Image (tube, rainbow, N blue to C red; front, side, top):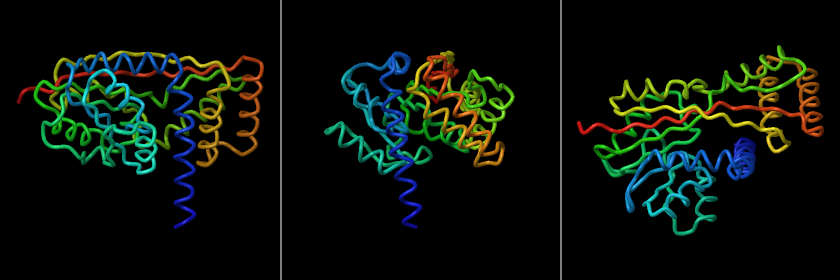
Length: 257
């Protein structure tokens, strides 16, 4: 039990470090700003950020005059968020059972969350419950099957990407956003595609992570993992790394029914 807890804590710490690197990148800053525009909320409106992590979006929404609440299933994440943004409203909670009343918020935002949910339709039903009539919802996420990585071994890279995607509960959630909204009774659905391009060592932990994941599934050998990671490290050293992530942003409105 202690070993399991230690592993979970280590994973959370690693995730926070990665998010801290990614969140300040210009592409990520612009993407968050776009999500706030799509929420289109008046001053003082209540909004929930589901899967809030360390709380950056909650703090930014609050700075813009929204009554923002952050919800995350990880107690460790919530503890970090509360420490970083004292005075903000952070709650431990599940996307399937949010700690909110019916029709309590005018906005719902979830960034890089729905691919972790085995039942996206159920989470969307819960989003509809907490949204007021005409409330706005924005989902952001990458398609895990379409990571684009330059490599001297394209076939091995394809195997690594697909094997890592298969470890995700719902790796294709982002490409399903539009139909999820339509099937869930939402209106005025719009979808945008953004591509993040990364060419420096800041994203090496992501690349080594997907290779490690592929190796743990047995899709590649330890020798293949070591060779591929070594190549990516050399590419980063020579400023020749190339990683592109297609990211989908979808917005909709809750009907008045």
